[in-house]
Image 1 (cartoon, rainbow, N blue to C red):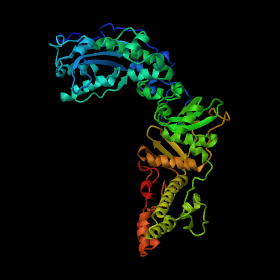
Image 2: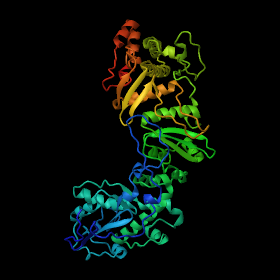
Image 3: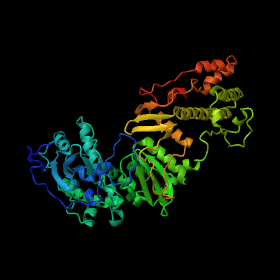
Image 4: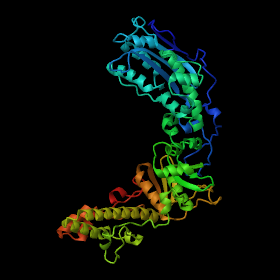
Length: 568
């Protein structure tokens, strides 16, 4: 960006204040300055190994996204010959660059339109044909405007109107549309000050809020008024915990939420992985969750999630607590343990915490497939015990495949679909059981997880090293998040490792067989229906075709739960 304040065309003016010039200060530093909101407490966190969960300490503002004080805003405004970019042209363009509450430079130029300026436009703006006669055409104006804007966040009052003309000019001259982030002060005003003013017109807002500049339907004066309005709105946005650019961009949706006043509870949440829990006024835990980004995840409850359950949760919400963790795997384990101990009412997982993880469900129609199983009431589902899931998958799935074939031959397709779905549930349980047992049988295991460091497992359970599960405040103060040996934890670990195999490297495995899986692959239902329908293939031959030997070499970075993808 050039430092000079002089441009060759007499109708085009740009002023830029560089380091060698004194910066113009429009007003005292706005209250959204980070030092005016929260004290900063620096905390170092190393990923060399799994360490203890950090207390809820305010981190640097890098954790909160891009601080507003470090964001460059460019306020733009245009004057035109009409209301549509298709049938009308630009007559004037102005912009002002702001950063940290200070104006860094201005841009203003007339533009020679393709048609005469209508008399009512001249009466409104004061711009006549004579004033734009020597002005540059839109194609000659655009390079300097784009240079001035750069990658800054674009701001305007009813910005969509201004950008529609600028984008139309860009496209008509063979350029790409502007892809900058945008902030519309009209939308912000409707959310933040609508109850304070008769309407949200720029002139009304400037008068009601007593802004230093007043608009006059000229591009530069309107830009300066919009810049004043932007900073006034940012000050008010601070009451909603808006201290970063990401939150500002979401503000129109956030403030529209009926519980928006509780956004202040999310101010201190860092952009780190960890666990969080909501409590009511009595200190009871309402909900427990995990996140790879605590700040973003918790604030998302105030944006697009319109479930009635979330609405009830936020109405009871009184405080938000959190613990940062070394990474998402640790956070997932912590979440599972805390849910089992606290049983939060809004956690679906908490309602089923005492059920055997080897529980499946099946319809009453499918209940008559296996000999010895009693018929169940409609809606009841079949429970599978661990020793049953350890059996031969062909023996378990073959009766279901046979039943699907019979129902299909009888053209009872809806019943066949129900049995097919039950077979898929059983396949899922068989695969999960194999993963859990492979972790259990592996014994002590050391993993290197990208971004999380060294993780130690003992029979599939996360080992408590370096005070990882220290006491946390909540119901029953002083309770320790110690492992309870529940198979749900093995399920959590197995599922996470299977989904993130490319991030994991096995360093050590205690078992001589390593982390291995059974040699017989779990067949899909269609693989059994064909052979069984022909009655020409035995179960033994099917097993032979499904036999694989997914073995693991602990020294190489492969899927840490064996060939889970091919075994299920």
